[in-house]
Amino acid sequence: MINKIKLQLMVSSLLLMAHFAFAETSTAVKIGLISTLSGPGAALGVDIRDGFQLAVKIADGKLGGINAEIIVADDQASPESGRQAAERMVKQNKIDFMTGIVFSNVLLAVGPPTFQSKTFYISANAGPSQYAGEQCNAYFFSASYQNDNIHEAAGQVVTEKGFKNVAVIAPNYPAGKDAINGFKRFYKGEIASESLPALNQLNFGTEIAQLRASKADAVYIFLPGGMGVNFIKQFVGAGLSKDMTLIGPGFSGDEDVIKAVGDPMLGMFNTTQWAHDMDNAANKKFVSAFEKEYGRLPTLYAAQGYEAAQLIGAAIRDSKGNLDDKTAVRKALMAAKFDSVRGSFKFNTNHFPIQNYYLRIIAKDSKGRITNRLIGGAVLKNHGDVYASTCKMSD
Image (cartoon, rainbow, N blue to C red; front, side, top):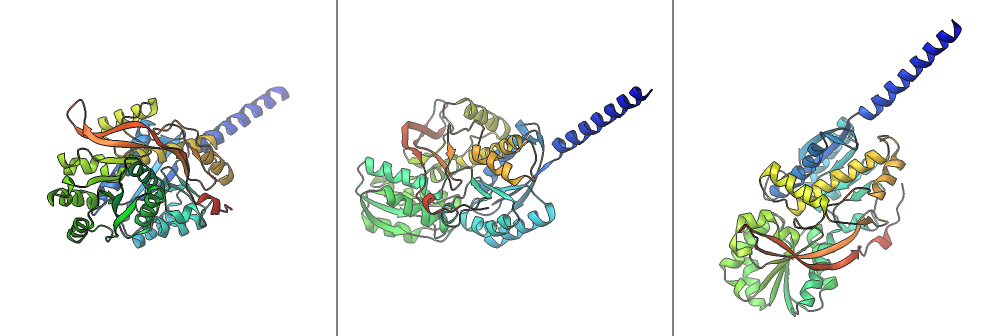
């Protein structure tokens, strides 16, 4: 009789343990996705959101094996709106991770309340130099790049192609300044002119006149979203494309810009860490699923949103869903054990990627679509950023 009672107690204990184990793994992870979903930069935020949500859908609504609750907010490309959304999410929604921001000035406003609450921010785009260097933070990881890097690759390409007199144009905000600094770091020729229009400016009459007077043989632009669409239309309309070669980062020559501009995009070079025609299994799965879900080719922004979700999922899985153990989650994020659509990469000591950067050209594919095509091997291999040496990481 006593043995029977002991056996019943043991069974009850095991069932109770199983219940608690199940309860722990079935708890939803809360993710705050703040992005630009209105205004001239809306296409960028929409692509990040769509890429992120696709990764969750493919995983049956889960990340790392547990249910994922995604709370979406529009920052309207406003630092103040972004900060307010972040404060609400960490205080009221008690989120576990935050992601999604497009613009670096917004991210710089969102960072302090997020880090102070010990919430991990996983960047799906913005990579300001501040967070790569002296303001690096144990709760920040970039699933994309450091702002300067893609522009450094462009500077390398422009130098290798023999351009001697290049004009540069980028918005007057942190990422724009990082872009120009990155380009200049690797470009060995003369700067014909340098312009810093206001972020989200759409009329470029002054810049077009300045270009015409500069006699530049090439123009390097970093103009995200509607800025790039309008500039390229005005650049070609003014006849400058006949004498000046247009080059940009992946963002300024991406699928959303191509769709809006059309034929004038043909022949434009751009640099990136990812391309939709990269030949690896993870990328083929992503591109196919994205086209099926949304009826369009993914952009770099969409790929980065997808990768942010994959990184979060890997961290949840490898920390066994114990999100209160910040050290374990951070270690899992740093390991980044997932199949990346960009191929192999690893994190530097400042939590920014060390990865390859490539060159694309806009051309017509076998289906007659105007799109990007990867050309050649890596422009920069296993490339990190220049700010990591000044990062003194602490909890």
